[in-house]
Image (cartoon, rainbow, N blue to C red; front, top):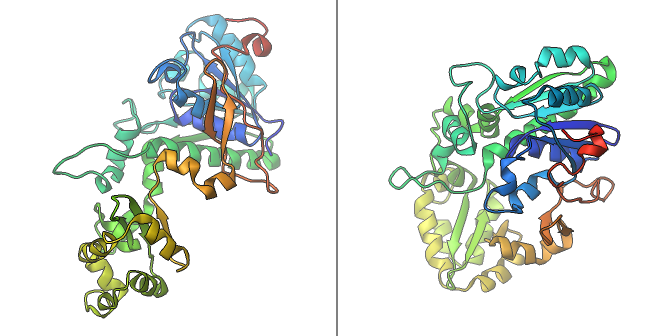
Length: 370
C-alpha cells in the first residue's frame, strides 16, 4: 500500500511513534531517529518495555545526537530524501536543533511534515508539556469518566491513540494531494483538538440542551453492563431499535418491564436509565454468565462477555480473526502482539516485525554512527 514511501520519525512515547507505526503497517519504510539515550519508552516499566514494542514495530532504528552539528547534518540529509517527517516535540524545539520547518520544506518541497503537539502551535497553552490525561481533561472527555466524589484516572490512553490515528489520516491525505500537485506540505495535529473531534457529537448536543455527563452515552445508546450470579460481567448494547428492547425483555423473561410506563418508549428508557439498569441487574444476578451467553447467542441481541485481556486473547472469535500474533522480539523473547486491524484483499498488508534495538540501523541508514 505504501511501499516506496520513506518516513522519518522523531518521536517519543506514543503519538508520533503510533502515527509512524501505522504507516509502517501499511508498508512504508519508517526510520525512527532517537537521541543517544533512546526513546524514554524503551525503559518504561522496566527494561525490554512491552510498551515500546507496541508502538514501534516494523521500523528501522537510528541514533543521532541532534544537539551536535554533525547529528543535525545527518538528520537534514535523511529528510532531503524522505517523503514524510513525523515529530511530537514541542513547537519551539525544531528550530533550536537546526530543523526549522520552512527550511526543511525549502530543501525538500515534496516533504510532508507532520507535527504533533499537545496543545497546538498557538494559544496560551502552546508551550506547556502534555500527556494523555491532560488532553482528556482539557477537552472535556475526562468529565465523562471521572466520578467527582472519588476521582480516579482509569481506562486506556484515548487522547494519545486518537491523535496518532488522526495524524496518520492527515498524512495519507497529504500523500494523495501530492500525487496531483507534486508538493508536500505541513500537517499539524494536536491532542486537545483530536480528542474533542473524537467526541464531537457531545459538543453538538449542547446546542440541543443535552449536557454530557458520565451517564450520557450509556443512557442514550442504551448500553448496560451487568454482574451475573457468578460475579462475571456481561455487556448489552440495545441502541435505538425497538426489536432489541423487545428481545432483551423476552430473554430475561420480564414482560412486566415492557408494560412499565417508564420503559414503554425509547425516550422513557433513556430518561429512566438508572431505574432500568437496576431492574435488569436484579434479573441478571439470578443466572451465571454462561447461561446468559447461551440465551443471548440465539436471540440476535448485541451482547458480549466483559473479557479480561487474557480472556480476550483466548476468545474463540478473536482467535479465529488472527489479530493476535506471536512475535520474536529482539532480546526479550516471544510475545503476543496485536497486529494491524486492516485487511487488504483479505490479508494484513505487511508481515509483523519487531521494534528495532537502539541504533540498530544507524550504519545501514546513515553510513556511520553519530
